Length: 443
Image 1 (cartoon, rainbow, N blue to C red):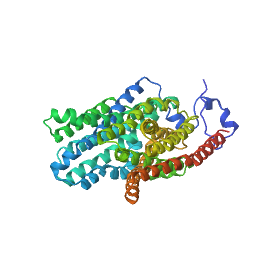
Image 2 (image 1 turned 180 degrees about the horizontal axis):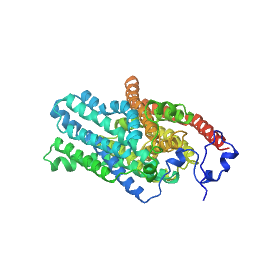
Image 3 (image 1 turned 90 degrees about the horizontal axis):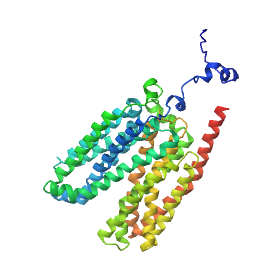
């Protein structure tokens, strides 16, 4: 049989499209063909290991808050000092997220996520050995080095292993991990582990660190690259270095998502940091305020399991707009409603906690992203987002100080929610321009 050697054409004309080999193999690798999502059942094993890694992320992150008063007493730390310590990881996270994205794209998710969970474990174990402000501050700061490797690597795993129609469900499942990890830390730190370890907060934090080490070991044993990446490793990896970030920022849809992300993180971090205090200011006692403040977390778990499966490329924008609308209504109810109305507002806040997942799904669909550059894209997402995460709580506290009322802080949240609704217009236009460009390139 005569062998036909394929000669790549320099122009996309009829001749190129009609050659016999063109129907068997693409002329050059693209994100949609080279980084093809897998359909192997093993993808669910990957998802389970990823969920446990992210669960330990939340477990260690939430372990300090229920013990903070006892730790402050033992180490003779003021409330201001404890506040700085608890925020140490977020400051490091801002600077580490983009390098983490580059590392994930260059070295792969198996190595990157394993290293991230190991650093999270080191953070927890180092906290158990802290004896003053600086040792505890630096121990918490280490979490800001490991956390981005997990949160940036996780969407890349989903992009590699799951098809477009399954990604929403997969992301919804793994996003319950940090919620449940934090909830478990809050529920068991003082009621189970402290009594078990003779009222020792050090052994309690150390135990949470051991959970993270187990997760790191489990991920290292289970994780592997999809078959497509093993056959064509150069296609499963995106461009590395600053060039990857520059190329992504040039995309209209990516810029629009990042702007929405900044405001969305301002809202989410602000409301969750101040929610118990706001509820207490509304007249609830401390115990009731804590219980009611947990309502958004519970509904957030449910929304992560239910909503993402419906967030297909055709429905994602509409779902995002509806969730922003929930925030507008929720903040008004939080400011002025009582009883059942207030509970409805908290429920809407919980349902809307899926916003970050929906935005990541839309980001996956942006030009030049795909599985290959998902690490860099998610690094940008969390870098910009955590800037908002630092600004949000600070802004709400400053507004409360200036006005002497937490109601004004809630109304500030309402303004942010309205801004997010308004941002749907440029976001929708950017997505339509992206789709038009895709159709033109295929014509």
